[in-house]
Length: 597
Image (cartoon, rainbow, N blue to C red; front, side, top):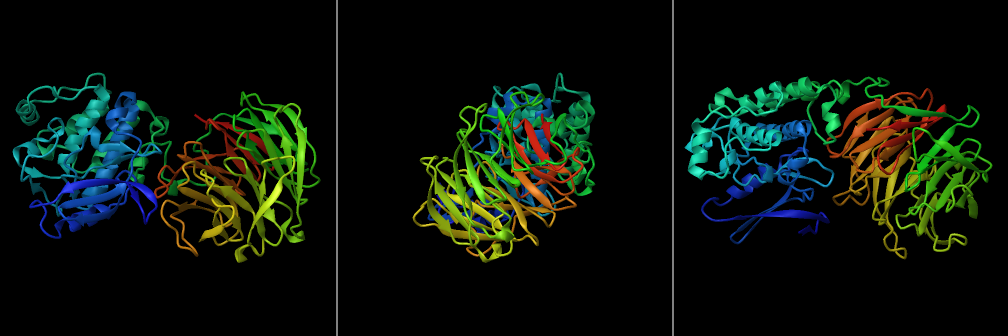
């Protein structure tokens, strides 16, 4: 369905009413589920009681179930799934909720690839002690012995089911033949020893078999303990950095994360430490003409770098390990602040300190030609045009205008652009003018940063442009902005050495809002931010010369995963290649292409 107030697609779980729920009891359970806030648990937004129906409104998980994905998971991926589920269960258990139906069909992925525990349909509430099963409920192949016999249920009951899931992922088969009659399957779970998982590294097999112990007291005491055991065993089997190599977004607490030396807790990573040093290609540009901007063409074959002397250098990066210079664009007389490709890659817009924007025809990258020049007057204090952006359809170009405004140009005919609309300047831009802009992926929203604030404009109707929100949270100037690929998150870089992550999935207050998360770790002003094409990673860089990589698959629980070191002076721009395998960073010292795995 679609939630009208939240203005977002949602999933609606329908439960039958009746004697199972006493009056008001469903509200208590629904509130408890809605109170759980963890990246590996489905988010509950609302609940409704209507006649004989009980409805739970939750986030829509459209990435499919673990049942669909399990055939593509290798042993490392299976262990990463185990850690993600254990993290979600730990959060639920601490709040007195047992799931009691953990199975691949109830483990779903969102669009960003984050696994979430869903369907607490037969969940039981407990108050720090075990509860008794009032009826046999669950899925036979994943049920713990005490769940079958009507014994005392506890967090260990969920760990048994999780053990079955990991056993299945690692071996491709369930511990006991699922085609047997249900009473026989139950009898096996109660009394038949589980066959050791064939072909599984011994440390991991031991952890799984312990979770499958018949006596609950012989299993790991908590989901946290299970995660610690599994993480340590996987580290011994696969080596350090195994979690990162899976490519799965896994959100772990510091204690579990510390078992993998390549993923230390973000809070304890000293700035400037080479936590992750991928292969890189450095391009010396000359100390008199450092790079201040960098941008990939949509096909990833061309890299444009803006330089201090106002020129743009075009590089062929078809093989990013062997870049070659293909041309130089000379048309500006001042520092080149922006070089941006149109979505189709045929036009490059460049902006400089001389208050002009030039459109270049790159249909033939080896022979670029100037199409047109857009001139405006900003006033001496704003030091030229600092940013310029294309709309996703390429028909509109946005650039700062005079008197702290934003001008939208119609590029239907790039040789003769027409000025269509002007966005009124915000008082927060008074001292600095507009420093950064970004269109949302759907083209409906334009984020405009200036001073300490970022204003959001609804530009879906060119005849009626409206401001929808003002994001105010930084204590110093906002220097860069970027939308995540799915448009649900906006990131802002600031001279206050922080990066803000703003949740745009729910309505924002019309005057101001606070960031959902503030990333700290830089020791100097942050000058640039960029999302990877899949939205899982965000790069930030600035005056401390370090490039930080952050896991932001779930913006509510970001974590710093790596620090790239190699620059010796300020890093002014960052950009991911369209395939996500290369990160380009422009600095006062040189341009670096990082070859990411």
